Length: 183
Image (cartoon, rainbow, N blue to C red; front, top):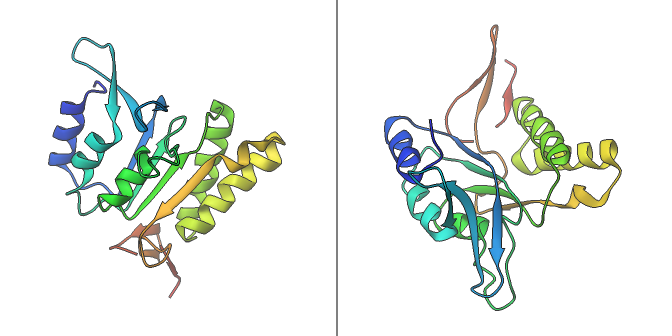
């Protein structure tokens, strides 16, 4: 109902989620070497949420396998603080895989990327191969350099974050690693 931190915390308490997909604004404060995503406060005003606060919130979400930060500069860092970006902080706190944007990205590119990324995951691709599919979509449909904006960081042993089993009714996500079982 609203994009506040307490609302997110409450939602995380009530259900197990495999993917946290944030669509919104982000920025990186070069002076402080810290990344933010923009939530709202209780009055509906912009509230810059530091990456370490989001990382604390998502840290204990054991079912969470992937965070997609569809926001500008979600993986931006500085040489003085290479772990100051929101994505880097999430990986440090145990999120197995994080996709974030290195720089500003257009809505059109973000939509193309997300569509093909999730389609590839549903087709049984590993997360890294699905990122490639999303980047190819941007490159072939937009013809500009935005294809390099999405960045994947992960500490998972491989890019297989879920087990997908094919059934008569379609794919079913089962467990913790994505591969198609067509038997």
